[in-house]
Image (cartoon, rainbow, N blue to C red; front, side, top):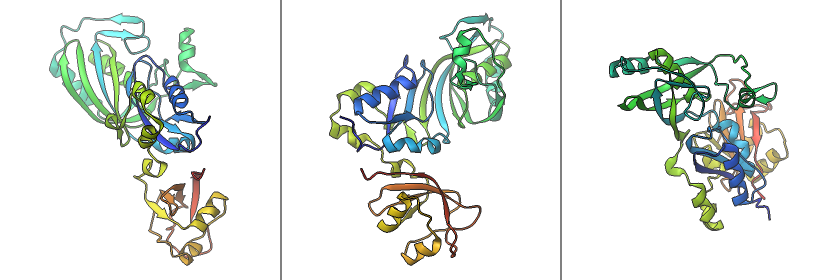
Length: 315
């Protein structure tokens, strides 16, 4: 029987050797839910935080994908592979005897802030609808446009040559394999990733996570306690609380004006950007954003927001 009453997120500690898609499929089968998805692919060899969205929670994905990520990674100097990690075929080897710890520390400092990356061929990005990794397996090389990403924190945790353990906090769209490859090129010896573990995605960290094996053993009641409700998942967004009548109108796709809200006695803060709309039961009804720079506290007959996603959590 399909479970249509579970909505929100569950945080999985992804094991090595499984694709993110496989993990989502297993979670979907365990929870017996109709819909499931994730908020950012982890490579099969990588482990750590994978946010799995369930039923109406799948509508949260576009907002959660914007959040920064934190990783712990092991760099292996002197080896370059076609996949930019140790699962690939070695294409180049070089001695590292002339590289000092000071050289490594100086090079790492160069990669903090905004940097330019070329996404790896072995990635889930698509070219004319085909994932790049499938083309790479056929020996094809497709030109990929550069992208600017932000490395907000980059710290070396330990150096035992030829390995360097480091931690990175970065913007969405950052490829840690590409970062490893670029650091290796800058040092002149080449490098690839030996290990990659996502420690955090947005506000969700490993301490919020469950292993797949643990999830399989939990009772339905225990699982329900681990589901993060949509309203809580976006707790960083400001909240506007509305009454039952306005809630119904939003679910029907009706336009709501500030005048109508004020007649209902709604407390209308001066929001800018995205915010949550919460019903009397504390459920997330919608994610909206203010129109242009207009304050939603301003009186008038015009619509006060643009609905980005509407959530039907009443089933």
